[in-house]
Image (cartoon, rainbow over all chains, first blue to last red; front, top):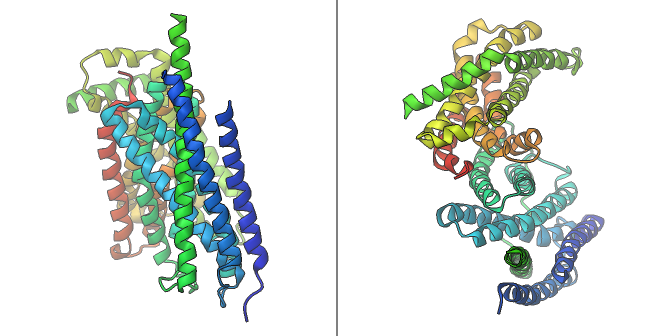
Length: 33
Length: 234
Length: 223
């Protein structure tokens, strides 16, 4: 029986996505100055 | 081309690599979430593996780059090495944060606990503290030559520390037997999962390179501006 | 080179004991921390002997950090470092001298704190005095070695008092962990075999830190 822990997966992918996308956006904007 | 102009060009070019990297990471997300089978015993949470491990890999690469640049800077005194170290430390901190965030989110469903003081997670935690200390130190020293020297010393010391932290934790834990846990990243990964993992490592490596190159180019541009301003004042 | 180191250490220590304020405040601080720890636990749940090694070493760490900070701050206040650098002093001798002075300072604070600790927490020290002092010496050497090096950097930064602990604390994990584990085993009279692994770690750390300091200390000084 496969455990029902998809919420952890979603949370991790979202959190990391926000972290990495956020940092990339910050770096990108810095390059525009 | 003046120094400022060539620095600006470098910023533009590295953005291309960063753009490609973003596409690769997006592709990883799609592949991991939609096109990789779910592991039967661990469930969907196992897929955190495909972003957690590449993050740890890039944090490790960033750390090695900082250490190497630190040693080389003290030997060669080339300020470009200091810039590369600074860029790598900043990017490394971000990826280490990613490891520390994804680790517990993977640990809770798989091991039943948010945190465990095992060798890898603990070493990563202290890696974060070393990166953080490195960035704080750089922020607190004004003169660029002094900043480069101090950062290099701290970079070398940090590189020497991590193996000792690892040994301390290993020693600590051999005397406190831990419950037997599943080994989610065992060597026997079925083909599709292994391919996703390898693609993840590849995508994140390009991501690291793009971010570091862009930051390095920006730091070069800042220094070029400062030098040009100093020139015109004369 | 050793002679130069002794001279530098003696100078530092003479300065220190002439003013005495730093030394006395470190002592009082140590006593206070030990006393506060008594109130930080529920004696009906946790016995003093369980926590004692940890309490001892946290106290030593705090007191040590205080002592290290003052070492180079004193130098910076009096601008005597510039004078030292102009003189034909071997850079490594400078490090060794400062480290020795710090060692004496921290060691003296520990020497007073230890009986106090035994008193407050009812820990019989005399039966295990020799191995305990060995552990304290080894851990303190590692602590002072890395601390002297890092304070040479920290004193040049904007927020020196905050910078030193931030930089130092990760580096204290191996020696303090080793010290606590060894102290706990010494207190409970464990056989030597159970201590050897941690001892190797502690000694290895001391050697690596001292060697690294010899190599990189000169880079912490302005040319």
